[in-house]
Amino acid sequence: MRIDYAGLHDPNAEYTMRDLSGETMGVDGARGGGRDVEITDVQTTMVDGNFPWTLVRVYTDAGVVGTGEAYWGAGVPELIERMKPFVVGENPLDIDRLFEHLVQKMSGEGSIEGVTVTAISGIEVALHDVAGKLLDVPAYQLLGGKYRDSVRVYCDCHTEEEADPEACADEAERVVEELGYDALKFDLDVPSGHEKDRANRHLRPGEVRHKVEIVEAVTERVRDRADVAFDCHWTYTPNSAERLASAIEEYDVWWLEDPVPPENHDVQRKVTHGTTTPITAGENVYRKHGHRRLLEEQAVDIVAPDLPKVGGMRETRKIADFADTYYIPVAMHNVSSPVATMASAHVGAAIPNALAVEYHSYELGWWADLVEETVIEDGYIEIPEEPGLGLTLDMDAVADHMVEGETLFDDA
Image (cartoon, rainbow, N blue to C red; front, side, top):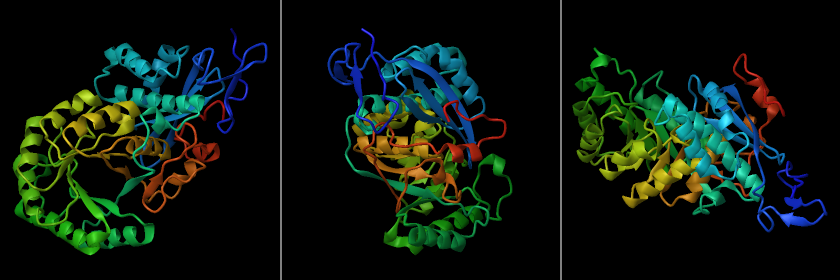
């Protein structure tokens, strides 16, 4: 039987199918259940944000197009182009199967971790957008439904240029009072004036005191108005990390993020178990397998997967489910455009142990212009009920901010 998918390109339409006799059938109902759909193309465009965001579009013969995003990284668009033959002609509703298919097909390019997993993530997010539109359900429904109607956002603040404790406190107060966030993060791997040799990862006493002053100034200034986390970007030796974590135990620190390099889980576990300061890690490991020891050995107090980097929406859900086995909450790392930010929010709505999703672009005035809908309002993301991710790219804004040499999607 041949199916006529006329009208499916309209995300606001009531999706129906008609056979050649004119009989109407629901996409999720009888006579095939909407299974007769094929991917026809995959395209990418890179946007020059505070990171180079790789937007991904998956096209189908039903006229439905899904939008996703891959974490920035050299070679990601080329890898996605390399993967196109492995998904064209496939059914976009088979998200798990296509994910495993791409992992297997791209094993030679290193699909255990790195930019290959990132490229697969971008396609996987777009598939959730396609599937949601085909089935007329929001993306969170594909993940099992939702626990909450809105997801908290933590604002990654940037005062590292000054590295002055009072300047950090001033910015924290401004972001809380003027921008409406009740969750913040500041960097601690910032100049203090006491550094002698940053390569050896050792924190001198003056450096520790300077970081404690930042923590004290910020947490005392906002007090109960906001939770505040602090990021170290994998910078310190185990001893220095332990000294720093111990020195800030008396303050209301939401978490201390990535105090040691990510490769050695034994060291990560030792640092976490040696302090009452909550320790967070996870953005620099890939897929559920990369997070296994962190969670099994309770080497983190909070896990921080990066959705468009770690494997996509379902892989993040799987990591969250594993974390919940150990009652470990999830705070999703995120430096993305509105597309992957909303994808993270859909996952955050669908898991019980979500703390927050990061927002890294509060100083970029046009971030919100990339889509037609409002994403963040008063420090929260209201989860849309529209099919798929519930976002519409503003193609004019995308065109205005493309990386030099990039071309816009063919359907724009």
